[in-house]
Length: 101
Image (tube, rainbow, N blue to C red; front, side, top):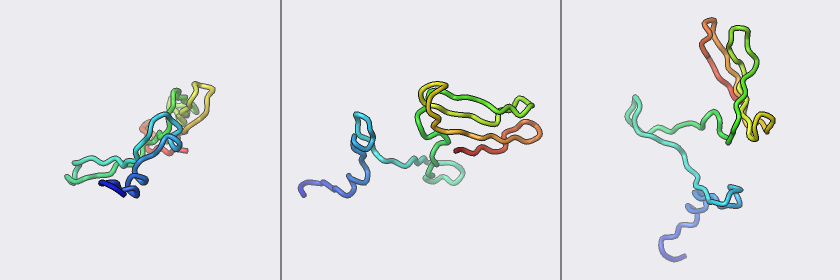
């Protein structure tokens, strides 16, 4: 090994084009930001929608105008579903929870 090469770190940190399936390499990362109520570094969780999409469908109206399901798709309205969110409401039509599948 020559110079400052650290293959174990490089292999753990970088993602080659074979793994990304794209024409560019990627880099593994965890999202952190400073601040909040504790004034320290805080790790951010993954987003609810973690796949690319180009269409969002709303369905399952509960009778009060509240949609209970959001469907995210890649390839338009008849494309492949990449994520579904289920929404629940309280008696005042306020969203109380969201779960994903």
